[in-house]
Length: 267
Image 1 (cartoon, rainbow, N blue to C red):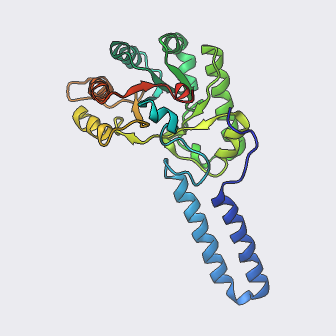
Image 2 (spheres, one colour; image 1 turned 45 degrees about the vertical axis):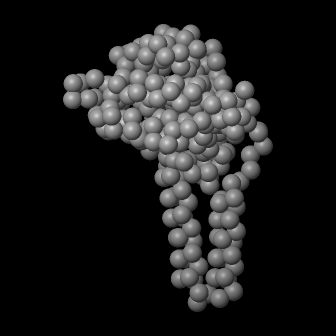
Image 3 (tube, rainbow, N blue to C red; image 1 turned 180 degrees about the vertical axis):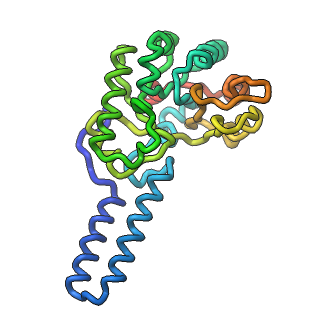
């Protein structure tokens, strides 16, 4: 389990100090208020920009690659978001079986509740179901701690009731977050996971282009992001993940890289 004692991230500690210094400056020299205000505004802009950077570590711990021990074992992680999808997910599972690969499915709670047997099938086949929030709200990154807690706790309860296993990892909708998320994750015993490479397969229907992005500089310890829910379609109407996965899995096998779940990478 992650460390249950939450600590303010360094950026937020520095921001609090800056606000205190700005207030002290205005009290000591009222005429300098424009400079103090400007510094505070710039600080808020920086914090907001960091929240829009999914792979940032400035707002708290964030898995942008597997632990060193997993990389030393030549492991990589395939992570698949926004499902389960009744059309796409079963075909993804069959492809993973064909290549003997394991994957982590970041599932949306309300979709899991709609297709509980599909979630159970993901686990039955040796994969992991993790937390991608209950509703995948577009405004998740501007929620306060209570709203975030409700979303994550609801998904924890939903997914655990369906699969019998409580998620260990969380991926924020679109990867966007704010300074409150790290505190919420610590309280719920979750780790934040982003990725080292993504193919933009919700927007790009060219399987070769998506695969090229995922395979560029592919090496042990990589976390790859794909989608079974909201998947883009090829010109032939095929969900792009179904054409991309064989390319990725064959390249991984040729490089002697073994796809594992994020929880297996902790071993």
